Image 1 (tube, rainbow, N blue to C red):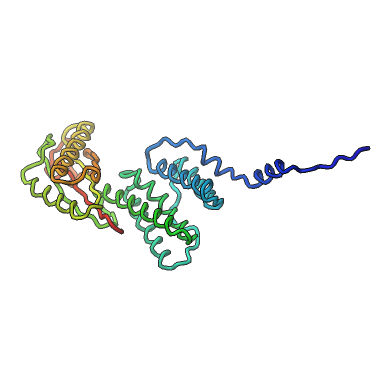
Image 2: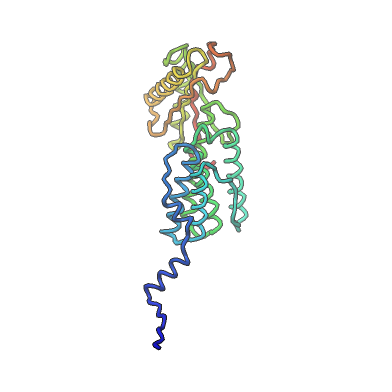
Length: 286
């Protein structure tokens, strides 16, 4: 009887090694089809990108696995719980990251994920990236990219909250208010002085971000009021651009009758609720 030897060829050996190193969660994250526009979908997209970068570019299996699991969790409609999961040796950096997690939690507690879903989802993923890179501690450029990305999106979320009239944002912001006659998208008398002051503040730092939140009172139907609020925000945008504020730094949101400064019965007119909130966020560190 002839005895056959089992000879493992280099190709077969490579296949065995590849199978033993397979990461099903990474493959699952790569195949995610994320189409939503809420905060969970936005976070899922960024986690998916981070997972791909760590897997294919950095060859970091541990980080790729972590981001992949977060991408899958977010794609299923659940935001991952913010927090440091790896040890950061540098105490100053750890304190800075912990403070950022507290800041983001405060923003989310007052509805940042609803009012500014894109910015909130990105802020969460970028903050996790900052924490992960800080734990590794050997990629200064990557740390800075993740940190600065988080700060930029956190400011955007805070500015949008303030523009909605939501209290509790933990980032210092400047606020100017323009009011409107009932049913009109033309500002009320006295608006020019407010617009001049807002434009001056916006132009004082080329890095500032401006969000214009349009609002109405509860007179009329909600659908029409939403449209009017959007028109008011767009009109104030044009007035600021005419004063030299770059359009690229301005975002507009129409909130309709959702966030009144004064709560009134449905169908009641109110001067203070017909407004555009001009919110100017910091351009530097937060």
